[in-house]
Image (cartoon, rainbow, N blue to C red):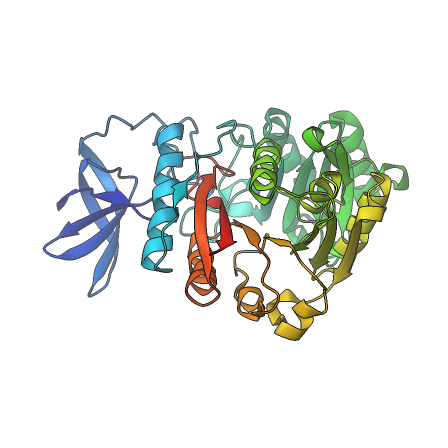
Length: 433
């Protein structure tokens, strides 16, 4: 069996080695280790492989906590010490900025840390009826597979949600449409746990009774979703309110529906907002745009600091939620929200927003290249804070800001939003030179 010495980790948390000049990406291997590996994909320039045996272990290797690690596709870094995970993600961010964007931050911010376990307050669990393998399965997909792992617990979910998994399997197995329930979405707040059952066929009266009994027994809200996200509704109308999260540092609370996008990790979200506000430094009298604003996660803290915030979001439903949240927090006088497709932003559409002293951008994985290219020379905000969930698209957009628009990349750093995984969340500060 071939042997490799691991040089680094790539953006997916795989060990990187070179054997006879060929790059080998090895799942389960860490920098500095000497491992035996077995390739599962062989290409002319590279191979993808699994570590079969560790001949020399890294001092940062730890015993994975979860029994499903290595099989489950949800986590890829449980074998690496959590502090070292953040350092590895910081290197991924810096490498992307340098190699993709041709830029380098003047300062590397300290990593934002939070709980390493039980942090995931939002999750989408897949469901499948597999009679040949014991019935209903509920959980995440297996690694490199469309199959669903036979999960009985999960250490990144809140403990009470993890404990629900076996009973959730039994519940779905007893439904008349057990083979037509593809997923269960989980949303947890300090006060409420909501389970949204996506179903492709109508529920029978008996099914509805079973779901209601489960909700009562487990102390959760049950919602049903027969179509798209907007069709989600509480099984019992009285359960239709109560989902919200707070940002105590800024004295605001945000209401949301369980199918709305919110960050999965409330602890890191609060720290990330603190970092973003420190960098953006909103002040009374300033006019600041929050692009891809969602339901107001960054907008309301900006307004609370006394600035006027202009929130732009592609979803009409989220814009309505942002307006409601601003009104409930007494911030509607310092905020306005509009629906627009920012992936089609132009210089004219941005100019129509009026004077912008500063800008916060928090796009999805696709990034915000249309936005940064559309920034006009006559209306460049003095400061831009860019919150990213994809180092590659951040680096691409940073190249436009630095090399074409005249900004300096003052600093960048990661927020470990998804411990035990290779996902990299980050925040960067750009200022006009």
